[in-house]
Length: 221
Image (tube, rainbow, N blue to C red; front, side, top):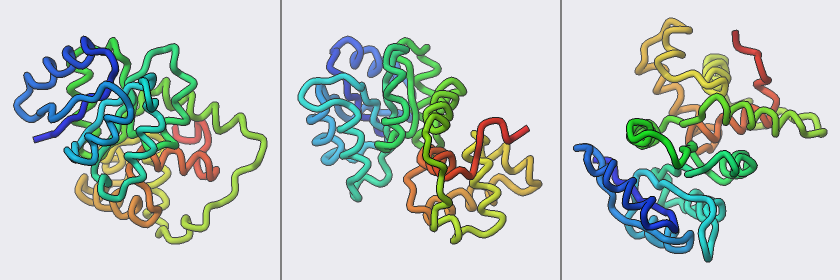
């Protein structure tokens, strides 16, 4: 059962999401928060698998709430999806750095919401191409050249190859097909890579790879 925490200051938004999610046999909404401070508190007490987090909330905004939840060692297994609108695109990079695992537009179709929760709950990143493009543009705009991170030396040649493919947006299944390995092997490598690099999930790996200069726009064909 996937346990979900809804964090949004609009009661109708929370009610709509709850109705959609609780119609699924494998998803249960365990709590609702009307502000960021309450979201942090409820995440600590309920230990949800997924938090759907609005950005603009009173008392504590969604980015800071995300940062606090992601920094809590007791919530290592909790994944956070930022609820956003086109007007909030400037928050994409900051949210990923804060520990978000993906983004969902508030006007998404019910099937998209359900898919989002399931994908993130199993440890995958949910980064739409448009979000990835904005992330790349943000990193590319920096004037300082990226420095190779020291932790990259801990990866084997195969792990480094798979890390780059994950950062390029490939799923475990796509990586398996590309490299001629099994899905289980790709998944095992992905987990080992995240552990070595001290990263929460694949979204964090995307940020790490672009910031370190390991992956550049358009390299994968």
